[in-house]
Image (cartoon, rainbow, N blue to C red):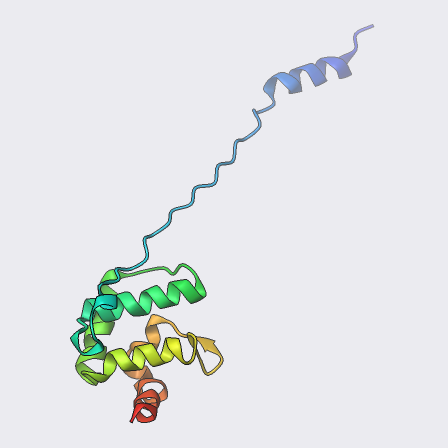
Length: 128
Protein backbone atom coordinates (compact mmCIF):
# COMPACT_ATOMS: atom_id res chain seq x y z
CA UNK A 1 0.00 0.00 0.00
CA UNK A 2 1.27 3.48 -0.85
CA UNK A 3 1.27 6.03 1.99
CA UNK A 4 0.30 9.21 0.17
CA UNK A 5 0.13 11.22 3.40
CA UNK A 6 3.80 10.61 4.21
CA UNK A 7 4.77 11.45 0.62
CA UNK A 8 2.86 14.73 0.88
CA UNK A 9 4.61 15.57 4.19
CA UNK A 10 8.02 14.87 2.66
CA UNK A 11 7.24 17.03 -0.38
CA UNK A 12 6.01 19.88 1.83
CA UNK A 13 9.13 19.64 4.01
CA UNK A 14 11.36 19.94 0.95
CA UNK A 15 9.46 23.01 -0.33
CA UNK A 16 9.19 24.74 3.07
CA UNK A 17 10.89 28.12 3.01
CA UNK A 18 13.85 28.72 5.27
CA UNK A 19 13.13 30.46 8.54
CA UNK A 20 13.38 34.21 7.94
CA UNK A 21 16.12 36.10 9.73
CA UNK A 22 15.06 39.34 11.32
CA UNK A 23 17.67 42.01 11.90
CA UNK A 24 17.11 45.23 13.76
CA UNK A 25 19.03 48.26 12.56
CA UNK A 26 19.14 51.36 14.71
CA UNK A 27 20.26 54.58 13.07
CA UNK A 28 21.16 57.20 15.62
CA UNK A 29 21.40 60.79 14.53
CA UNK A 30 23.91 62.80 16.47
CA UNK A 31 22.60 65.35 18.92
CA UNK A 32 22.95 68.89 17.70
CA UNK A 33 26.11 70.93 18.24
CA UNK A 34 26.82 72.61 21.53
CA UNK A 35 28.79 75.76 20.64
CA UNK A 36 26.11 77.79 22.46
CA UNK A 37 27.43 76.44 25.78
CA UNK A 38 30.52 78.61 25.40
CA UNK A 39 28.61 81.79 24.53
CA UNK A 40 26.46 84.31 26.30
CA UNK A 41 22.81 84.33 25.21
CA UNK A 42 23.20 87.62 23.31
CA UNK A 43 25.97 86.05 21.17
CA UNK A 44 23.88 83.08 20.00
CA UNK A 45 23.53 82.64 16.26
CA UNK A 46 20.57 81.01 14.52
CA UNK A 47 22.58 77.76 14.51
CA UNK A 48 23.11 78.02 18.27
CA UNK A 49 19.41 78.62 18.89
CA UNK A 50 18.46 75.64 16.71
CA UNK A 51 21.10 73.41 18.32
CA UNK A 52 19.92 74.32 21.82
CA UNK A 53 16.23 73.80 21.10
CA UNK A 54 16.65 70.56 19.15
CA UNK A 55 19.10 69.20 21.73
CA UNK A 56 16.61 69.93 24.51
CA UNK A 57 13.70 68.43 22.59
CA UNK A 58 15.67 65.25 21.89
CA UNK A 59 16.96 64.92 25.44
CA UNK A 60 13.49 65.41 26.98
CA UNK A 61 11.16 63.85 24.41
CA UNK A 62 13.45 61.48 22.50
CA UNK A 63 14.63 61.33 18.89
CA UNK A 64 12.75 63.44 16.38
CA UNK A 65 12.25 63.34 12.64
CA UNK A 66 14.43 66.20 11.46
CA UNK A 67 14.25 68.50 8.45
CA UNK A 68 17.28 70.80 8.35
CA UNK A 69 15.79 73.25 5.84
CA UNK A 70 12.54 73.62 7.80
CA UNK A 71 14.40 74.00 11.11
CA UNK A 72 16.70 76.73 9.80
CA UNK A 73 13.77 78.62 8.33
CA UNK A 74 11.82 78.44 11.59
CA UNK A 75 14.71 79.51 13.82
CA UNK A 76 15.94 82.24 11.47
CA UNK A 77 12.44 83.71 11.46
CA UNK A 78 12.13 83.31 15.25
CA UNK A 79 15.41 85.19 15.80
CA UNK A 80 14.32 87.97 13.44
CA UNK A 81 11.00 88.38 15.25
CA UNK A 82 12.31 88.19 18.81
CA UNK A 83 15.89 89.47 18.47
CA UNK A 84 17.92 89.32 21.66
CA UNK A 85 14.98 87.76 23.54
CA UNK A 86 14.99 84.61 21.37
CA UNK A 87 17.57 82.66 23.44
CA UNK A 88 15.92 83.70 26.71
CA UNK A 89 12.50 82.54 25.46
CA UNK A 90 13.93 79.18 24.41
CA UNK A 91 15.82 78.70 27.68
CA UNK A 92 12.73 79.63 29.72
CA UNK A 93 10.65 77.07 27.82
CA UNK A 94 13.05 74.24 28.59
CA UNK A 95 14.65 75.23 31.89
CA UNK A 96 11.54 76.53 33.66
CA UNK A 97 8.76 74.61 31.92
CA UNK A 98 10.89 71.50 31.31
CA UNK A 99 9.92 71.17 27.65
CA UNK A 100 6.15 71.21 28.21
CA UNK A 101 3.77 74.02 27.30
CA UNK A 102 0.05 73.93 28.06
CA UNK A 103 0.33 70.21 28.92
CA UNK A 104 1.88 69.37 25.54
CA UNK A 105 5.49 68.64 24.57
CA UNK A 106 7.31 71.58 23.03
CA UNK A 107 8.22 70.84 19.43
CA UNK A 108 9.97 72.87 16.76
CA UNK A 109 6.54 74.13 15.65
CA UNK A 110 6.17 76.18 18.85
CA UNK A 111 8.83 78.50 17.42
CA UNK A 112 6.79 79.22 14.26
CA UNK A 113 5.20 82.63 13.76
CA UNK A 114 1.70 81.18 14.16
CA UNK A 115 2.49 80.06 17.72
CA UNK A 116 3.92 83.40 18.89
CA UNK A 117 0.74 84.70 20.53
CA UNK A 118 0.25 81.42 22.42
CA UNK A 119 3.89 80.74 23.31
CA UNK A 120 6.71 83.24 22.70
CA UNK A 121 4.70 86.39 23.50
CA UNK A 122 3.54 84.96 26.83
CA UNK A 123 7.08 83.94 27.79
CA UNK A 124 8.52 87.29 26.64
CA UNK A 125 6.00 89.09 28.83
CA UNK A 126 6.99 86.97 31.84
CA UNK A 127 10.66 87.75 31.21
CA UNK A 128 10.08 91.53 31.50
